Length: 115
Length: 112
Image 1 (cartoon, rainbow over the protein chains, first blue to last red):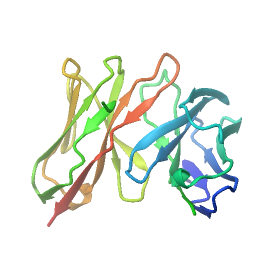
Image 2 (image 1 turned 30 degrees about the vertical axis):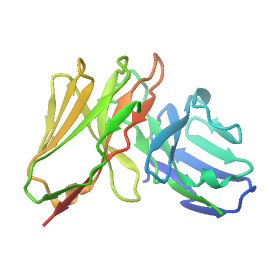
Image 3 (image 1 turned 90 degrees about the horizontal axis):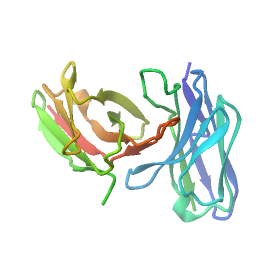
Image 4 (image 1 turned 180 degrees about the vertical axis):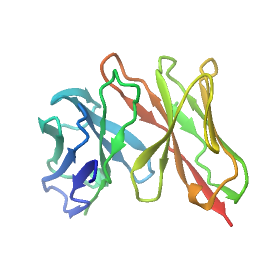
């Protein structure tokens, strides 16, 4: 009964390849996010979607393209992978803003290694 | 200047000790504040929200000082299971969305 799930958990690929990471939440939340946690453990927001609409795009290279087919899914496609893309990518979701809780629920992360 | 600053630690404390973490933030328009916990190679999880009046959850007490833009977390009677990285988090989101800014975390190691 995983609330926020991501696949794959580990991804090892070569520079220049294109890869996708999938995220699904079964919490009924309206908003979903992608975060990147680099080797120094710094966790930074990349994108957020609310009801399939892009809300936040944090000056991420356009090689990164999120896609939300419905409000329970937010996938991340990365073109022309670079060494610097190696990181842990976390998906998260949160309930509507009018609720009392601002908690974001994180998926288990996808550890991407670019060689 | 980083938007959210924390002492990275590590803080190495014996079981039963009291330990305090501090955090400062730069955006005075920040709306809400949190402490998240992240275990090694795991996802962050909400520990507690932080309110100006101060709030307590068992052994954990959080405090916010908006004038000084300062947030604190106090852990009393430390347990081995408290060993983790504690992330100070500030929400600078606008009207219809949350935008969480994470500090780099303070690592706590509790030893027997």
